[in-house]
Amino acid sequence: MTAKPKYRPKLPDFLSLCERNFAQLNPLLPAKLAVGERQVIGMDDASYFRLEVLEVCPFTTVLRIVPLSDPAWPALQPAFDVRLYHDARLAEVISCHGRRGFKAVYDYPNSEMLQPDEKRQVNRLLNDWLRLCRQQGYRPEPVPG
Image 1: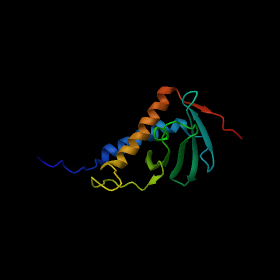
Image 2: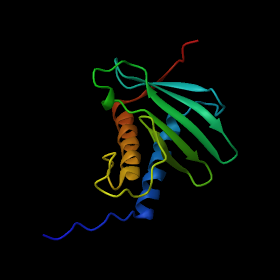
Image 3: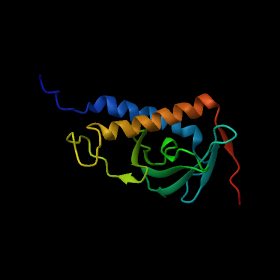
Image 4: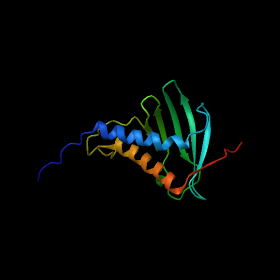
């Protein structure tokens, strides 16, 4: 039996994924990128998410995306912190379900049961979620007072 080759990240593929995330995230952003600004995103009659601006710097913005509904299966509703790199037009997940600081590659197996390509996978999850928003015909909702 031959050993499976170690995962090696492909930077062009990862950057392409982050570019697609940036492009899909742009229509969901609040009109004004200022700390504390919020946008509620309705996906259907029962699924709502809040997008909140946490940090604004000259070249980057950090957003938090959290579900507002109380799902029966919380693990199926993602919660992300995303850093937007405006100059490079990239969006990268910096936190997913409370886990921060993803490494490019993890040894496998590992004590935390993370996949070798965990960083790519959480960014792919954001991409899938953004695609679902678009397919569901997301609609910005007024933010309650």
